[in-house]
Image (cartoon, rainbow, N blue to C red):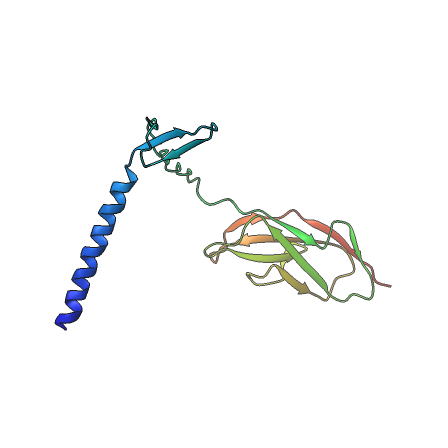
Length: 171
């Protein structure tokens, strides 16, 4: 155990000695020598007719200050907007279709207790849901309207889509 402590201590001293030696070499003077052929040589050792070169200080720049980003103002939650994507306005549903798929789009996801509720001819056709697509049927012949609302569990309406008119064609 004593032997490894000695080796570690010696290694620390050797590393410190090397660092001191290297740092002194880094501050050595620079000399310029021009030989008989006009060849210029720069060196850190003095030659007979060499001249010491005075170098300008190193061009260092202080680091730029990093500006903290400005906090964005909190305007509160974005009001939700909904619209029906399907059915489309004035769409005709042929005799082969016994059901209708209603799909919506919104400008943001639901938050908190908000839910979607689909309506046909002013009456709810689904319970409040988080689904954005529902299938309803059977369909009533003739002119129909569809809409969707964003509601709270208390029944409060947060947002409504425009009514979309579609026609169910039956023989």
